[in-house]
Amino acid sequence: MSKEIRITPIKNGTAIDHLNTGSAYKILQVLDLMDYTVTLGMNVESRKMGRKDIIFIEGRELNEKEMNKIALIGKGATVNIIRNSEINRKFQLVYPEKVEGIMKCINPKCITNSENIPSKFLIKTSPLEATCRYCETRMKEDEIISMIKK
Image (cartoon, rainbow, N blue to C red; front, side, top):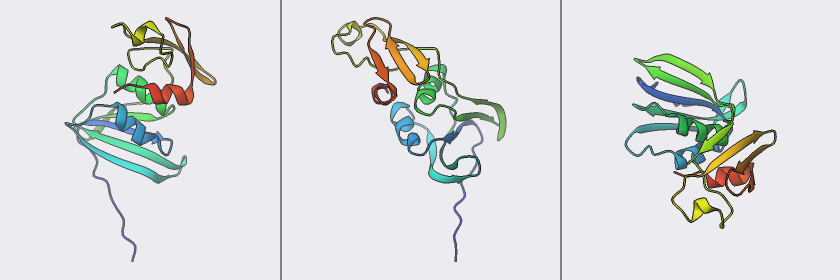
């Protein structure tokens, strides 16, 4: 006998779909969601991707900085803003051209790591690379993901 697990749709909040497998855990680490109900599906079947991760956040619409964090970790993810159990807005995330204050520079001598100055990075998309606007240090995709702040 096979059992099917169903996830209850959210009434109001954010659904992040079409995440590469394994990326949902990192996204949860960098978003402050302790006061919200979060449902997570990891490595679930997907007609479009084969396997995927998916996150449902009840009662919370994410801001631009949070969307940029998700885009850098899970480019191509689909975000659905849910209101009154209906999709209010739906869009696909793309890499931002620049980000501010969402990740640390890997250069320990960068002024942003010793002074109270928000980090600023220009983002190059293919391959993914971030360049610090202060010290010009370049970070590759795995470094970018590991340096995103909560």
